[in-house]
Image (cartoon, rainbow, N blue to C red):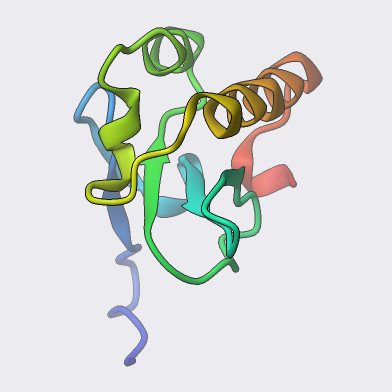
Amino acid sequence: MAAPPQGRRPQRTCIVCGRRQDQDRLWRVALDKEGGGRLDVKRRLGGRGAYVCPRHECLERLMNNPKRGRVFYKRPLDDEAWDELVRELGREVSGGKRPEEA
């Protein structure tokens, strides 16, 4: 894959609020090999992923969304996997890290 032209950065859309931002300003959530959700801070995990703003409002809406299982389209997370992902997001939020600092 070719590098983006100088001065341009990859853009991604938050799955909660729909804002387009630079990729390094968003957190990536990805499916792991066991089918659970993981916070992919370094954006290195392969497979299906989604991006979310590290803003408190977006994280709250994501955690409380009744349609949360559809984040990964045809591979929904079960309740246990979702709860673990929420705990992981909560730890990151309480740590106050921005995605590019991790």
